[in-house]
Image 1 (cartoon, rainbow, N blue to C red):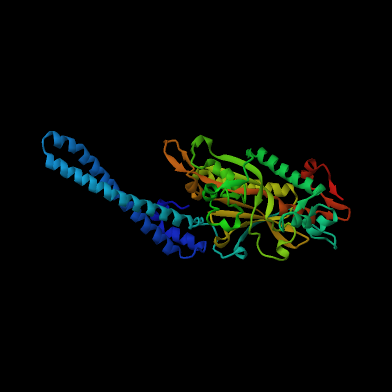
Image 2 (spheres, rainbow, N blue to C red):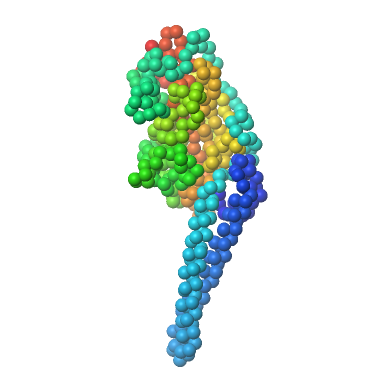
Length: 424
């Protein structure tokens, strides 16, 4: 969440940034934050003043009694009792103001960086780069859901039977392809210096609040109500929360973690052709990159993550493009975000496969994730994360773009992981 210092010292810039994200009533909300913070601060100041008076009076009572000034000592005792009663009221008021302030801050998204373009939705995102191999498919090319059926790779109907729509069952070489991609992505991350984590896929509410999924996306998360636990929408949540309430040493940064997990999302979007097959699921596999870094190095970390994801797509021989997201299409928590999309030749459309985001201090402030600099002062870290990669749409693009009359060709980089060159 935004810091009070950020809001009070850069009020106009914060409001402009929130308006770029199309946050409703940005000026009024920030004004309310400042009002509640002033109330909290004034109450705290009065409480501190009263406590100081109580301490001072308490020290003098004994001396007054020794000097035989009984009336003065009794008056001091009465004043102490009066102050203590008043302090109870002040303490309650301060707690209420602090809670109101915290709840307000939870509702405010991160402020985008200056280089984030203006815009309302996906149509306003800026194409930064295009790359990869062009594909020429047979005239009778099939979409991946038909290929999955033809080669018995994925059974969507069986998933509906077992669980419901959005929970496919991978079979045979389809399951092997999934496992091959997971191992390939993890090995590539390890080669790039990431430490693999195997976290829980169920987290508590504090973890959801720490990375910003709560309260913003509460309705999109599967909630285990009896235990008040949430199925994760991405490994970003448990891995980043490793560093909640932690003070790191500057020498430890940047921290680089990767994790493969299943991911769960209740809200799977609209209906129709855009969500057919693997295009949008309730449960899917993903390898995630997470970095914790110093503010002055986080831009470089972000670029290194972008280069890593681009390298994966190049090795998979897929046509891709990189988009700089506009303010209106960015996530609640991101300050800067780039999306990677691969082109589905059979569907004639782009499929998002990764978002790589810099959150600045927004998540770190929620998490209380700090580091001690060379001067032994503590500062908030920057957090970053990115998909490397989300599997469903990668699988869709691989199946569709590599179909031939002889079968589906496997990219060279994946052959050692799959154990086969063609799905036939």
